[in-house]
Image (cartoon, rainbow, N blue to C red; front, side, top):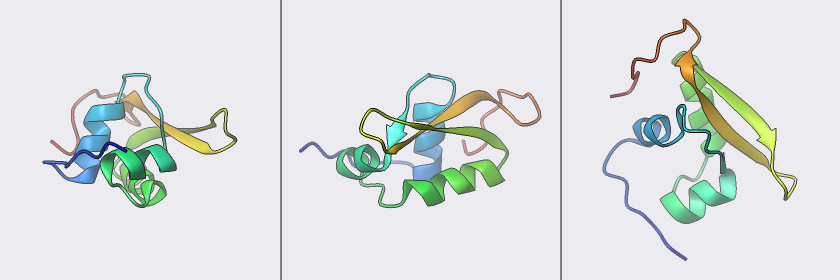
Length: 81
């Protein structure tokens, strides 16, 4: 089991790691790898900040999240940086 210590807030990390990259992250992946216990809450916070968050079902039948490159206003500017 690998674990990475985050040097930024969880929201900053998720924006940088997922926004516009095409990557997805499941709750299990977030907890085991990055120590993010409640990814669903973090995704809600990203939505409330104006980002487009997409939820899909991965091959294990669990939710996986991705973030669009553009926010709801069409901007690519960083929100949490």
